[in-house]
Image (cartoon, helix red, strand yellow):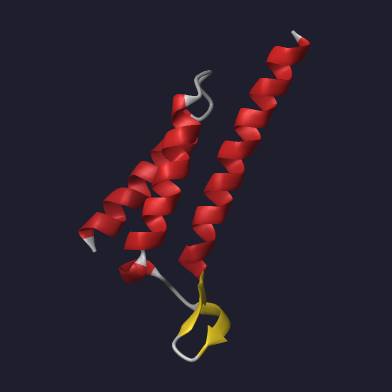
Length: 85
């Protein structure tokens, strides 16, 4: 459980640091999102969608796609700003 909490804290920190003008933090955020899917079992929360018996999408599973979407949006925004400016 400690590992899951540490990854969650790092994920939140990386999301905040995405505001800095460097491609490092969005890349770190993407890596942490993948890691989150591997370690989030102790903090899963309620099952939102049942895929099959014993398998489903939980509340904490939604954190990874949200983090990846944020990282991709930040990188696209920066790329667009650099090509215009």
